[in-house]
Length: 245
Image (cartoon, rainbow, N blue to C red; front, side):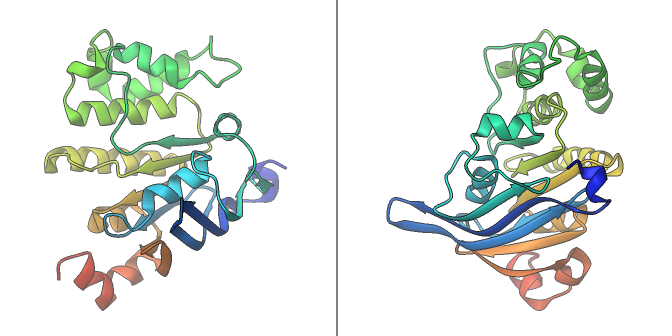
């Protein structure tokens, strides 16, 4: 059943009671969350809270030891990462992980590798060049010679080349200068305004709550709080732990 058939605002991505272990270490503990079609949801928490592991479990890079992952109503728990990407679930990993020896254009072409129509990517190229004009200017430049902020833009653009139904952004502002953080935040706003479904993990809680309509707080691998971003922003726990107030 397609997203449109299931109705606007239907859950697109769901984690249901997901546990993840690294050896004997219990990293995620019964994590349940959902992202509805067309919304931005933030997952915030301190370093090592389990945010990136949650993303890796959603995309299939880390196997869940319990629970289920559903995408567009389909149980994808046992599907490979490649199969999940083909269905439209795309991860922009922490640390950018661009192909440093490839040019900007080659990186973007790699982003379309899972598409059946990967020989017809011109509309998506124009879209990402409109979002990131600097990438158009640097299309023949090696990714490894670009700044951290430019590499982050390239990583997001590469993910968009896969025509994602749901975009997973893992720590997109980590290690970036404030002016670049503002640029990335603006891009997320443009994507959200265009109807892109986004799940965002961030240590920068103020930025994440500003982008998202809803948020979950992850502490020691478990969801401790959830709700509308505006409400969470005004709770004493969030103010003291994450907003420095």
